Image (cartoon, rainbow over all chains, first blue to last red; front, side):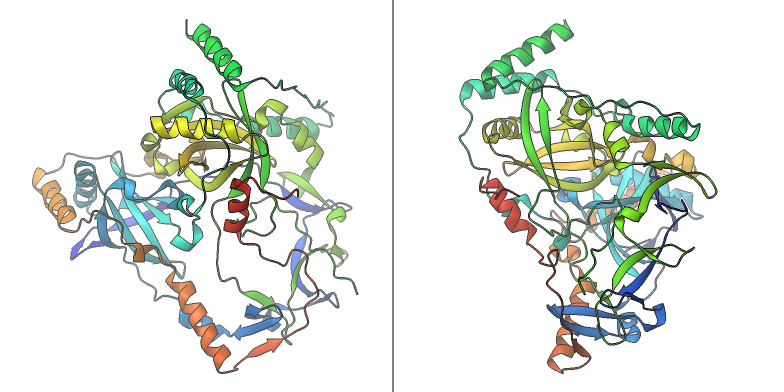
Length: 249
Length: 280
């Protein structure tokens, strides 16, 4: 990693491990995994990989073909450097820009690594970085998370829709009484963000179900429906506040 | 010959490419006993310049699933979803079963806690969505977004959508509620799990040296040029150049594609927020 001429040697590690229950697509008859191929939808004929071309559709039905050499020429030069371009206050990068996080680990010099992390904390800044990974150019945010450095890939501006370009929702503005009750309600639910308080219970239910089914049991599943009552907004608000206050008391 | 329906069984996000005017999902946002019916729209779009796979004559190709045993293409009805127990041993799980595994209550986005948005480490943020009021809920929607805006808080909830449970942070931006899906705690590895060394005592001078370096290279604002997609821009430039030179251009007759019309996501959202969404 490079900041001006100062180098901090680092290694990259994925910071996430997806825990989503993974399903495979199976052939209903053979219960075997299916394969994918490209076909001409008009003739249903398979087109082998070496005959496939890539094209950009400029108008419906009109493609500009780009060959392998042209596409390769668009690839950035391979580089092992992560270049820090600037440092900005952390709230400059809105949540919707963060994509994937990677831990950086020291590659040799541990002092420089931990010193940079501490300096980021003290200055309350995050770095904006550029690097090339798997033939793709990336822009990222370098942050200190506790003692360690984390590098986030950022989405580019075209990939993020901004609420600033949208009109405010239509409808009548809430009145003062409703606003003050809603505020009370939100205050009662105010707390710290502790990710450990939230579990993926659905994932556990799916896994439990899969295991039972694997043993040949047919677990019963009921579709539970709840009825919602329509009441006026301020009535519902005051009821909610009462209920929460009782819980706290 | 009629064009076969493209077979897609993947449960993944549609990439937010804004196809179709329908909301991605419709559900209910609740806080306390107040319920606010909402429509969810993707807030990210990926890959603005997708390349199509074409055959030798320039004909657009389709991706199909096929059975290795019979060599035959499979349609949606010929395929099921399976969880791999052992190598090549699967338990079949149906859409209906997945649906029934989610109790009605779990499908509501129930804002159970309100927190300071800045206190959520970005490590958790995954994808972004917009929530728009669905018919009749404008007032409660406005009440919630205004209250959150004033107190500068984000609401945290879990809910089940399309066969997956999501942890979300909901916060207002310009009067509109944004939903940022988040990773669950066990989806983030700790530095220890990754095998990173622990911090040792540091010479104060080295820290100071880096602080100076940070100060010298600091700006108040993020330079917007940083967030430009230069690779896509270069690709589009090349495409335009070749088009002007009439080089490597193929024209094919494309059948009417019902899913082919790319509808601008921004337009859909604008309509939806203005309360003029057409019945889907």
